[in-house]
Image (cartoon, rainbow, N blue to C red; front, side):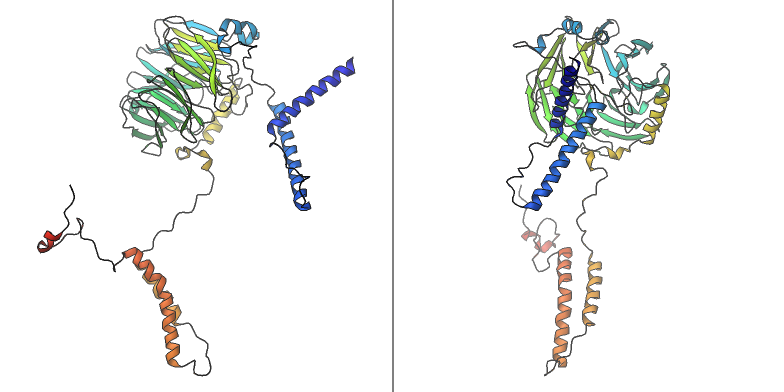
Length: 526
């Protein structure tokens, strides 16, 4: 029995490896039997062998480096996944996962907004009436809780959990993890939304006058301050792929900005009414928008086209690490899943208690958890398959020690990117710029080059020929022809610079005529 069991396990491992190899393979190989050219046949055989080896190496690397796989809800027969309640999901998961969903009722100081660190360990909570708190979600411990006694509109972690920014009544403030106020950013004004760009160490804010500010938190320097020109907005998200800021406006437009451009990089008309929510996919190629026109649209940013549209309202949108889309509408939260080819269909539903108004939905990184900030407090629900199951400890480590945090912060500052690196296509960085078109030469430069060419033509010695073909008159004629040939290209260039003097100049508004001829000028058409 033992050898049979070992053989069965070995066979299962081989089958699993074959499936992973197929995932990384380049499709069906070339038909080598039909080829007659022996040289070409040998070259293709070597290439096919290399492709197979690379696919096998990639499959083995995935097996050891990414051992965990995401798990989605799988219905039986005619069941629908969006009919599964949270209670039944919690009963089926392991003990650690069953402790993660919670409901925190805080009816006095709401509605609440939430924010997670990039590694998903810490959560920052901001109540509209001044309540601020930071929690360690791994141990479910409260780190700090205090009251600022004024309106809190938004919260955002900076490079790690040591510091965070809070958009308060008049200005944004920066606090440390102990709740001590470090900075007051008066230049930002009355900020409505905050976003932090981790790789550039830039804090971006949009204020009540529609002004977009970028400030470097490592040096304190104000990098940019632009007027959007499209009025007040509180819809703002950063694209995690290229650090471009997206703003949703009351005219139904979505604009994308970078700190080195006064005008928006892209202006899209997305809805026939104000934009209420905006979200970017982790890969940066998908964008979801929601508007007052009761539509949720998913856009492909490579073509700037709609790939999917739903008839639904959305107050808040968010993409998970594995591509799930969460949408809040009143007291209901809906989660959509891509079933292939950007075919997003309803995956899960969760209804809060009657009267709860959901303000913000946010997926927790590296966990199958969706955080919900609503009018009566905070909630957390299980969403199987939403989080990345494997994390790279050099990038985001939920279990990092104090020493690792310090080293990571130093490396982040050393590797800080300048604001110029923010662009729609970051793949252009470190590539060779296409050659520019040659600038036109000035008249003086053309004349100098022409004189040099004429001198060279005059100094050219012609071969002496017999039988009267080297007469002085013929030699002078040849010299004149050589000078004319040398002059000709420069004369054409000077015509392009100066204009065509042989053509008559049109009499119009630009030319100021003498009084005697003004009656002949062509009158402008009204």
